[in-house]
Length: 209
Image (tube, rainbow, N blue to C red; front, side):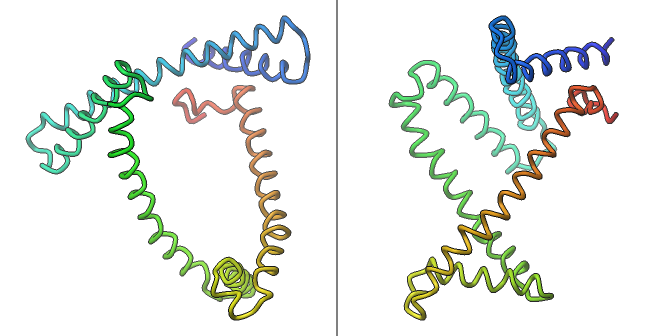
């Protein structure tokens, strides 16, 4: 029952929510909303469990002398930040001064600095991708150069036609490629959903099969 019961619950709940999307029945709609409310409640408990697990994990790192000093310091800062944001968020709300002050002066700058580091990885990936090793890579290289010249102010100085060609590449070929990727992702999501409803995909139970 440890395997069959969760599979049965997931299948029944999934089919009810799916049918509610296609069938306009008041009773089915009420049941679907009730199940979705329960999903929100379960997610909240899962988030609380994750926070407890985080605290226990990093507390054990701090109390272990064999751990590196910098690792213990990072864990201590993480727990202090978690405690501060939890206390100020519950006590004063997320729009009041203590929580908002720490968010604006610590969390946001750190997040911006972390994302700014991605520029170097993007530049490295672009350098490896834009190597004209074959015809497809050459076409990608030319399109990338034209798009960059069309968006940069210096491109229009060299030739007035770069912005127009860049806009055409972004609106026509790029949109067509994105739609193909989205259709493929949607079909993959449908396949995963059907496998989950039928009990063929049991990864959410911690099972390989």
